[in-house]
Image 1 (cartoon, rainbow, N blue to C red):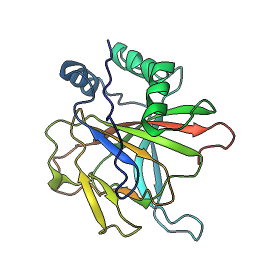
Image 2: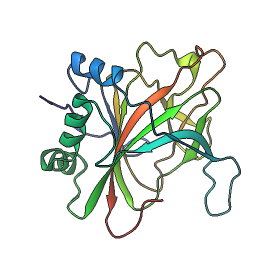
Image 3: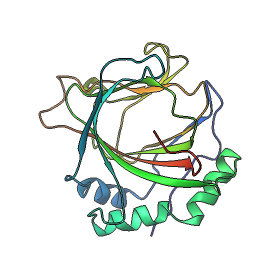
Image 4: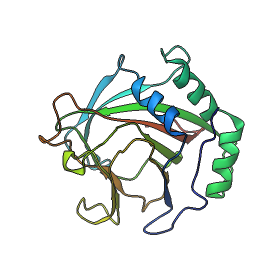
Length: 208
């Protein structure tokens, strides 16, 4: 059922990352959007920079576990992401062995005024694919992924709205700065930025 598309290569400007649209058949993407889970999200906030970790955020998160209630299409999609086929395709794309990693699947929601500040991922996170599930998203609403050239939120190389059937791959490095812009007041009431991340993480260090 899932013929998931990946970029042929990753660009190396300003670091290794890539974008693909569409990443799946349109009818499947629509089904995933319409059955995106609604229950069980936890609010996570860190509004003050720390010396060792300057990342700030306000968002809602749900880690997908074996007992997480999912629609049939979501269950099949997540099973594909956990497959050896997906892992091997990602290994080929980034040129790195992922056999010593685990895959974390996490759902994220951002509502009005929520954001994710400039940061690079923790060293144990090797590569992440971000899948977007939002139809007719206006960039004026915020919630855009910014590929940054530095830790400055305005040092923008590319800004990517979270439009349905668009996916972004980020290969972690000390230069892989990125952020999510705040959801603005112009977004319709009760609008959420809804995404799934599939992150390959080293088994030997806990994800933080």
